[in-house]
Length: 296
Image 1: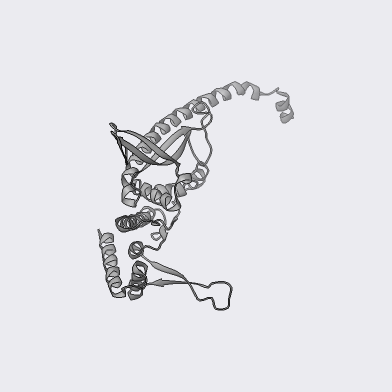
Image 2: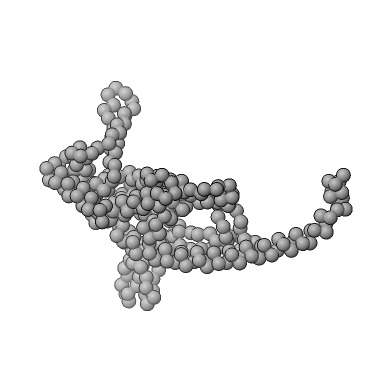
């Protein structure tokens, strides 16, 4: 009977409707105000992160590259702010990788623009203009400038509104970050810098998850041909193709190297089969430098 009355509109629900609409309007206004505060905070972080990452990029072999984080509004803006589970607020962030040409009179050079320089930039969305190695190095620079940013992104769903309401003891699950040839087309000092920043990220991953998850939780995995990167790894795993024989498929052999076998492998990565004695001396120097970096 009560359901039929409700459908007919002859119940108290119709009297409560105006108040419900007013409560909804007030809640929407409050949420919109919070979105404005969040948007202002994001603008500051986007600017600071763009500046910090741009300063790191030259040391990673990306001379003259500029990271620019642009924020735009979702459809609806502050009047109808988005309230889905995967993201909060009205902002959409685009990551642009630019090559900046700066004019000094009649001359041009690549670099980061200053206030008194007239420059024109070329590039676009990083996923469209950047190679996989470049994208990985920009990601590494972001993690260096803002430690924990990758983990926060990976665990964004775990911290969504739905899960926050259902979890009594909130824990950050461990993550694995895989870099596929992050040091491609990079050598010398830049390759060493990439290796050291990856080692720092690996340490910060373990520290950031230590209090919330297992001590050995998160890890960084790097697929590389760089002797510098292999020397600084906590565990060195070799993947190599075997002899096929009569089979049409090539068998894959995977094994961990340590001690003398690791030194020989790093020497091989550095020089191939040339000057094995000098290469092993160089491998010893790389391993020694890596240990010193981890201790500092």
